[in-house]
Length: 181
Image 1 (cartoon, helix red, strand yellow):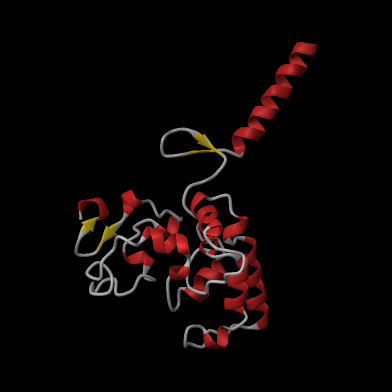
Image 2 (cartoon, rainbow, N blue to C red; image 1 turned 90 degrees about the vertical axis):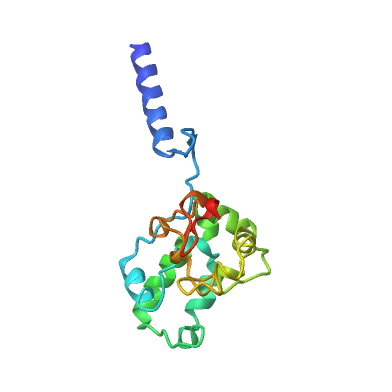
C-alpha cells in the first residue's frame, strides 16, 4: 500500500511540474516560454488594430501601458479615446500581461533592459528592442516602402501574431530572410 501511494504522489508531482514546462526549440524542457505571449483579449485586438498592429502587452512594462492608456486623447498625435468601461478593461489586460509579469523569454529580457526610472512609450525606445535591430540599415527600414518605420513589426516578423520574434522567421520585404542578407 505504501508503494502505491508513493508512486501516485510521484505521478501527481511530475504531472504538476510537466504542465508548467514547455519544450524549447532545442527539445529541452523550460519553465520559460519563448517569444512573448500573443494577444488574447479580443476587445484589445479589435480596438488597437483599427489603426496599427495590436502590440503584445509583454513588449512594455505595466507603467508604460498605464501612461499610454491615461492619455488616449493624444495617442502619438491621434485621438484614440475609448469609453471609460473599455479603457478600464484594456488597462487591466495590459497591466496583467505586461513584460514584468510574463514568463515568456523575450518579455523577461525586455523587462530587464528597462531601468525602473524609465517609462518608454514606444516599443522601439526599449533598449532590448534597439539592440536587436541595430544591424538594420536605412535601406532595410526607412527607405523600404513596405516597412517605412521600425514600429511596423509585422512587416518583417512573419509569426508576430503568435508572439514569435525568432530571427529564423524574419523576412524583410525586398530582401528575403534575415540571414540571407
